[in-house]
Image 1 (cartoon, helix red, strand yellow):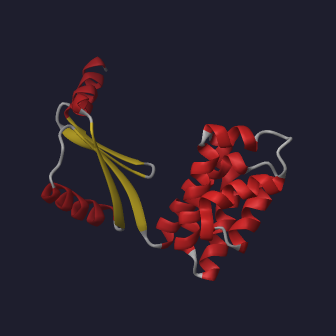
Image 2 (cartoon, one colour; image 1 turned 135 degrees about the horizontal axis):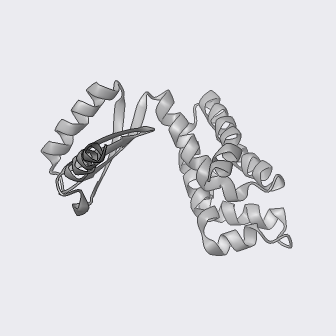
Length: 178
């Protein structure tokens, strides 16, 4: 996983810089997302890894899925990835591209895991508090994990805020053992 991240980083940066310069970040975001889905598909991965499948056929596969999003720039980018045998990195490249995009827009992706489903009002209040605490606009995803007993866990980049009952009980247990 770390090797994938390291290998994908320069490609994601190059794609983002190209898209940002051309003012086509949204276009590239959608194109890379679709291309990542193709690369992650088991059948497509078998074709991508097969040395007998020529480059034009592979680019044709991506072109079939991307449609009009497969413009000259995206095709050239995919051609470079194909040449250096980096097409399997597309899911990670797309993920890093989105991170660069959010950073440029001063947005942070936040994943909130709660013990119970939050209603819209709770989500809005939490989003406002997180925006204030993190100092950036946020893209919040929520999920439910009843094992938390109560409370929630917030993951924003490398920051984790554990305000769950389970987390507090584990912390209390560690303190008692000391």
